[in-house]
Image (cartoon, rainbow, N blue to C red; front, side):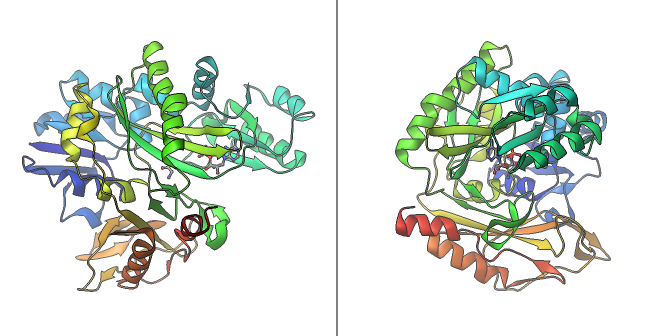
Length: 424
Ligand code: AMP
Ligand code: GLY
């Protein structure tokens, strides 16, 4: 079988490596992929948003199955376009991908179907938003409606910050058209949990839970990033909480999308906050998370491609999805200065005795060498029997990967370990 994976980051590398385990796979194409994947996939120089070229490539090369991984092509309708020429895909159609593509849509969905989330108001002009802020509870959270590379959220600790946030999103358009509408919502507190799930629109099967580390620096300081590391499973996410989330959030969301005529098929990502009033949805993503995927998929014991094809055929069953009773830790090695300004082009080398998982995100081949070409360069992932060992092992492996200006957090998993040891 010929498989095509759209996307080019560490998440896609993890998906490709897992799909490769399926014996019937003869070739995997990555569009565009990155130089660090060249031993695992055939790289095709077509951007993930270039839907026409993606469809043409798939037809010309008789692709049997396509995986569309990033949010942009999903929201633009890549799956609709591929299905229209008879190519089966893993990923939601455009009318379902809107669950991530518009926060106003997802908030209204949750309200209509009683799915727990932060209280909110939606505005389509700055004047009304600023008026609302005169009496709104503070702190508050201001979110651009559309996609903004995961950066469209501003937590305002004071009324002035909230006013600045509204002005910069709606008047200065710092997130472009994504900020034409905004959501202003209640500030919630509590541990965050990421739960990715497989759903064929009829049933939803959650994957093992994980914890992202979004801030650039140790102790959750510094700027928000795309994610500096992850661990799985997330110790805050107990069996009781999982049961509650299934009943109050996961199943109701799948059913709500179906009832709206927007059946969701693919990976639905639930970004949750475990508040004193129970688990609430912070955000939905219409795709695998990055770098959550890098810790979740190595723990998946079942065949990923079989699951993805069952999702596309609406034949998913619970027993198809089995996870190992182990732990994983991903430490992201970034370019110093990320997420603001950084240099690229430094050679990446890996010691011969490196024996964990390496998922490359921001790299390319230049003069036959692998060199850095992005903010988040790669993820080092260890899978071990428990979290302590997984953290130790991944940091030991980080020392075996070298490039100039490398930067990483030293405390990935530290909070999770504390919870395991002290129960908080
Ligand atoms: P998002 O892009 O929606 O995932 O938001 C980015 C981050 O902002 C989340 O991971 C949370 O840490 C934080 N956040 C978003 N919404 C809220 C909220 N209502 N209350 C508190 N923190 C929030
Ligand atoms: N790690 C968060 C995301 O993929 O959006």
